[in-house]
Image (cartoon, rainbow, N blue to C red):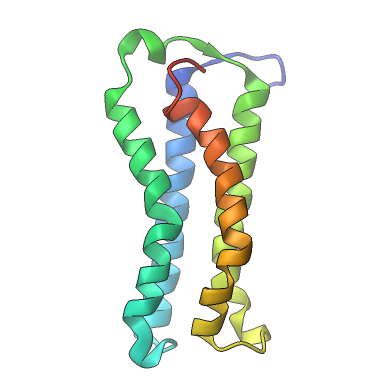
Length: 142
C-alpha cells in the first residue's frame, strides 16, 4: 500500500485480524513448545494464565467487531496513516510478547519471575496497541 493509497475499513480489519490471529497463534505455539519441554515445571498453569490476558482481550474485540460491523461501515475509506499506526503498534506489541518468552534464557530471572515482571512493559504497550486497533474495530467509523 502506497502512502496515498486508500483502503476500506474491511481491508484494514482483515489485515489487522490476520496479524493478531497469526501472531497469537505463533506465540501460543512457542508457549506450547516450552510447556512440552518442561520449561515451566509445575507452574505450567501460571504460564498459560499469563498468556490468556496478554492476547485474548484484543482477539475478542477483533473477532466480535468483525462479525458485528455493518456492510456500509466496512466499505468506508480509512486514513492510511491511521492503519499504519495501528498495524505498527500491534506488530511491536506482539514482538514484545514473543520476545518476553524468548529472552528468558539470557535473563537472571526464572521463567515465572520474568512473566510476572513483564506486565511492567506489556501493559503500556498493549494499551497503545489497543488504541490503534480500537480505531478499526471498536469505533463506529475509521
